[in-house]
Image (cartoon, rainbow, N blue to C red; front, side):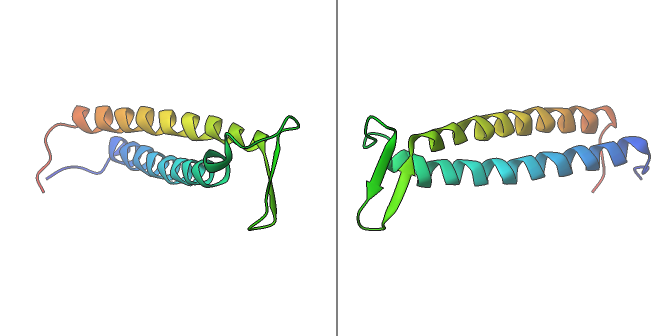
Length: 95
């Protein structure tokens, strides 16, 4: 029977942080691919594009959304590796 000690709590917290980062990362990727990606070649010299169908002005600066998406994706991977390392140090678990 596995014991629920500090390593179990740490494992749970790291897993929760990884899942939170994954969710926010996916949200950033979604926003990046819906707000910037379709219009990336349509910006004028001032960095703007006016979509006449939706009456929305898109800014070239919205391409900066890739940085939090990449950073959170890398943090998710690192937390996943840390979670796996914590779980492996506890030994095999019976389910």
